Length: 146
Image (cartoon, rainbow, N blue to C red; front, side):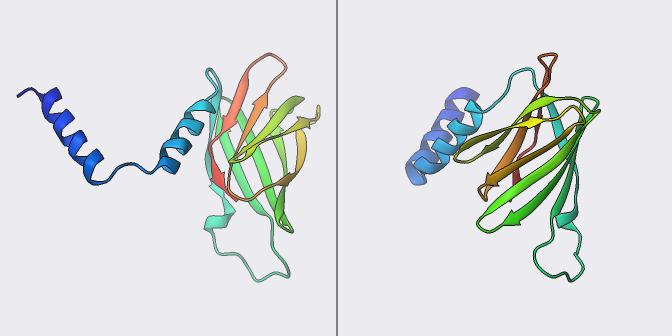
């Protein structure tokens, strides 16, 4: 028996004993469909949600920093009722288009020439930011949960 044949037998056994739920397969197809070929990936380098917060009145904004390809994205996530406001800064400063990608779709916004942006009405769940720069390049952040 070859390794490929053995692997197929093991795979068939797992499919029969515990099939992958349809929702998991659908989520995987959606994730693959949201890839941006050629985009620079900015990875999460700082998340103040992972540090204990001091006692404050009301919900405090969550601060994130992404870095990659010579670009930095600083983000402030603020809950506003049932949704979030995402405000941030793209460094080095440049105008761009921003799309907040979430599990139910996308919300478009603009980055001003100073590198600042605000996008309102973002639903809770997984989100990623996609920046389309004037030179045609793209920067995409990793996914984070709101």
